[in-house]
Length: 343
View 1 (cartoon, rainbow, N blue to C red):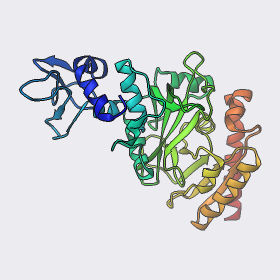
View 2 (view 1 turned 90 degrees about the vertical axis):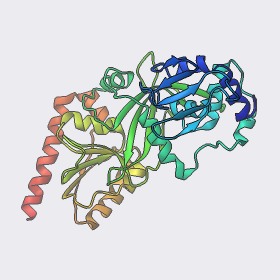
View 3 (view 1 turned 180 degrees about the vertical axis):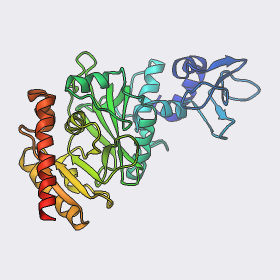
View 4 (view 1 turned 60 degrees about the vertical axis):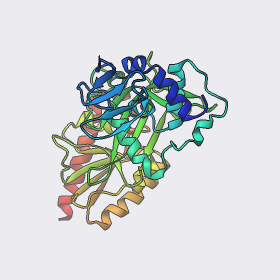
């Protein structure tokens, strides 16, 4: 069980059980399992052979709508919330009741973990198999932090892979967030792993990780549509920015996820005003200085928003929504009055 060929052959011997487990929206018709596509949607376009017949191997499939074909490892790779083929092989062995080898030789197979250029594709794939966060653990997590504004950038998956400090493959539920550039193209995915029992951030090393390209980009929350207006509030974490969004649901906001990436953010050139909602620390101040210079070079008016505590989610949870809204409203009005006075 150390090569992809061995694993694929073993899965093929249990093709029907595999289909019932991983493609439950399909159904058995004769010697085939029919389903809509390799994502597992209902339908009949994709046919998987279940048993050896007339020299044809089980486990092979063809999608008559797209012309794609492959084996059960390809189906598993599509269905898993993981960009790594090592994780796919581990999940296949788990399904087969086989233990992982100490040093998986299958990593030498032609199936490889994504390169840097493949990571945005892996991020888009992960987001595609996520679901809206309403009524999920992700919504519960955000509401426990006082947040009531969400958005289409957020997704949820109940079992996202990660590797722990011992390089062991594990799964936990995760809040997913689409990272996009100024043209709206998805360049990455932010993952926040959660503890199922408490709906809090998981107690693992680096519970917040990014796959794809973050530099210059952000997780965006537009009001009413995917088209941004001429004002934008940019800050660090998703939670701190959604706290501001909870206080002002009509604002366009974006989360750059870290102070470093806030400093690297590329503001849309059409903006008239940019509000920098930095964290209240030295790293946040440095990031705001860098972003201010870049935005002002584009002719954008720039204003700082600084929380009372470390970040705006701390302010929301400690002081409440009314107090946070009042402080932000005063900051917005003072900045606008100052702009009018200069004019």
